[in-house]
Image (tube, rainbow, N blue to C red; front, side, top):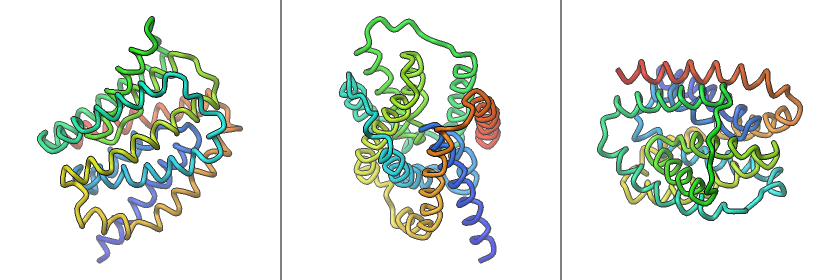
Length: 247
């Protein structure tokens, strides 16, 4: 019993911090939470849990931002993301969990370094860029719930205004997570145990919702440069932890 309570409290704390990060930046929730929560839960349980929690958190985040959403070319991004999701779920079912954890860690670190160095790509065909970013995002979402890096790098490369950047990410992630739920169900991953954990963890989700709203207010005021440096340090640490746990 004590062990179950300790696990619940740790998971609740991780979800709260990840939702706070989500509220401030509109991304980074899964990158922070997945490596830590994967130490407490197997990935086949964790992925559907994070999809459910992430979808609800993103809806809460989108509410104050929806007026800033710019839908230009987003249809290509969304359709490609939806096509990549089932393949990602298949990879989750067939690939060893340790390998996936190592992949998670490598992706996190590469993303952090690319963000820190402000690396940009010369994308001449924006529609093709949307398709590639969306497909890779869906692939990662279905397998490790980490749909952010390809889309974030793509939008960063386009130098979107801050609020549009945050709103577009939230809108895209909401759509992707909503469609991923039935995909995971068809893949047999929405098990009674996942539903049980979802219901038991509902208090943590309430705290997470509050953290998203708090983070959104902080995100409008915080010094972006300082927060980005702190977040990137944490992200790299999470990536190294994920690699270590997968070895």
